[in-house]
Image (cartoon, rainbow, N blue to C red; front, side):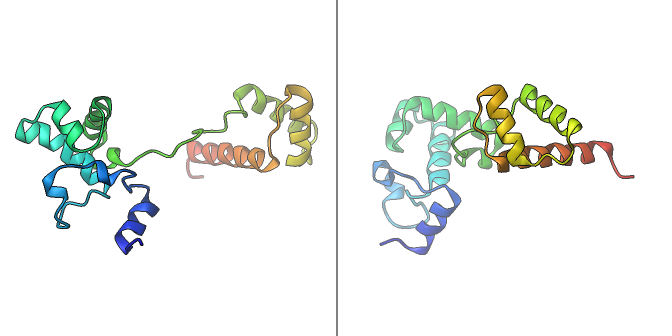
Length: 156
């Protein structure tokens, strides 16, 4: 059974998937330190090395991580502060199918027929590039570009 804190940690994407691998005694007494809190565990791992002189190997093992994860965590903390310890969303970070070349083709199609809808654009992309692009993805890409254009042109 999960409690409210565990549900909140999971919702925020910072629930430690392996809290049982944290062997540090401070995390075992159900007090301030919570092995389920991934950000807290990672922060304490780096702090242990910096403030208390633990070796990287000792700290990584004690907090249930590998040495490479320690160095990644340390770099993230140095570059981004605590927010750097929150795991990034997995998956693509952008519209990887809708490259500059593909969007230029979309622009050409829209210039020739301003009434062409996203479904028709999707069909034309499949014919020309062999891409399967959902019409909503095209709509979002066009909206993002329009938003950038408005932001860069400034207030009227």
